[in-house]
Image (cartoon, rainbow, N blue to C red; front, side):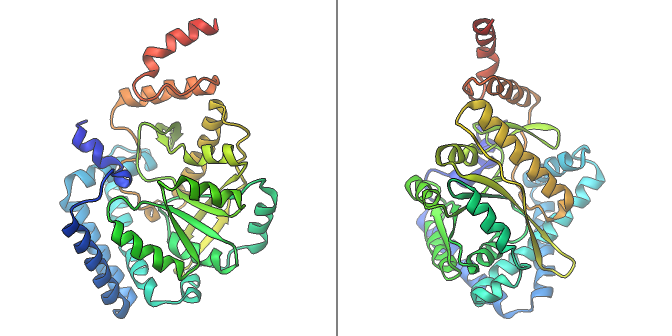
Length: 346
């Protein structure tokens, strides 16, 4: 795999923003799309945007390969199987529908936004908050409308913050931050570690999306039976703050509304590598369960698994090292370090 393709795998942490003119154009284009979709009927707009999204899948070979790999893992089929292609096209159509909902949100008040979601179980959320020694880390995926869900939870009077990326388009991020604050949802940049820890120390809710794309420096886990890596953030934060991790399952119902389900909390007892790996594997299992219910509603179109067998084997070795309570040696080092570690233990 080339360095160029590696950079494209998980672009949520680009070190620097793009050129100023690109950033301005992005903001202007986004706001223009919001205004247009705010006055057009939602149904036909969703169909049109869905077709455009499908066209991007067909016209962009690299993104098509990524999507086919992902959905091939989900279905347990080769990436070139026709059933994988059909699922990918369905997912891009669903993504177009979601984009229309997202773009129409600014024209709606908090109550209208929340009506996209069936009433959250306030008693259940409160029970989880009361039980957690710290805050609640809400692990979520690119399924459904996380924006509408956040607004629904905030309407219950529960402070909720969302960790987001501001590196690519800072001005667009600032616009979205002010917009979300109208719904009582706070956006925190992923660089703002103090702000993230403050949320959990105050025993508030912190939402983290955990399927941004495969990064080899994450914690090795099995997802749909294959080795990959998920971010270390949720388990590490939970261990350091005593917070519980709660996976939030979101699914669109036949009437178009979203339904929430709160999984049983994942408790991380310490920062021991074996405990971090166990907790992250539990997150991966709940992510797989969520996707499996309605795969076409999953719109993470970046690669979620490594492209090579060698990298998958390296992840497996690293997981075995962590499960023995030893520090993760990091990508590419597990094969070299493991024999010495086994000898030392013997």
